[in-house]
Image 1 (tube, rainbow, N blue to C red):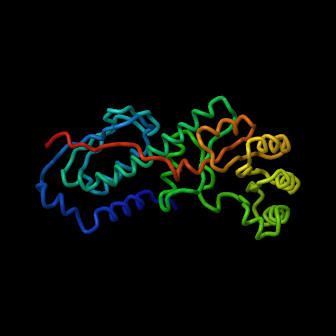
Image 2: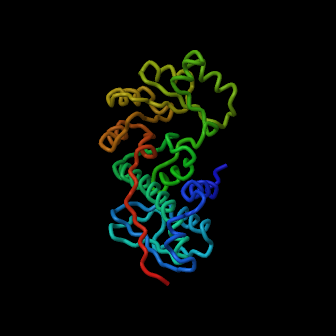
Length: 277
């Protein structure tokens, strides 16, 4: 379902178009070069295998060597990987490989910050489906590299009854009852709530997980007391680094953060030629 090779192939086709006219008109056909990936800030590395596969698809003659692995903390000034091969091929794969590395490392780094803030609590930070179209498998991988957990990969992964489902189904009780009747017994049923009255109704309906959406912190505390361990509790809605720990300390089990994938900044990495072979 998630063909990473195909994702890379599409990215290369998008970037190369009919051909790299600059390299073909300025770089000798048989020129060989070396190049180094240089970190220009501190970050959590993610996407090495994607970069490696990018150059393999451009030209199998390119040799890719890494001095670190995904999940490692890379420091500003570190050379964490290098290349050796036809100069034109290195130039043709450069932008796509960097785009993947910078994007995925940015997500991993952002996620790690949330994980560090939550240390000492029982809550886990999870992602959402707010991902770049076509890149979900890679972006969710980067969340795991950063120490976070994945929520649903797609709509088939679990039952999450949200506001519009509730309206379309005729209410919380009706929605949960229908899901319980139609879905396999192995699937948990999660329901989104915005008020304490909805939390109570979700409990009475037998929801397995109750999502507290955009609730003020004091209401989250009250909801957790109301639930009393009868269901797992997830909090969501505009969660930031300065608001995530109070939510965890309120007693929720999961905190979903859409910003992990939709708002993480790309890290700064350069690919610099280090010599002609």
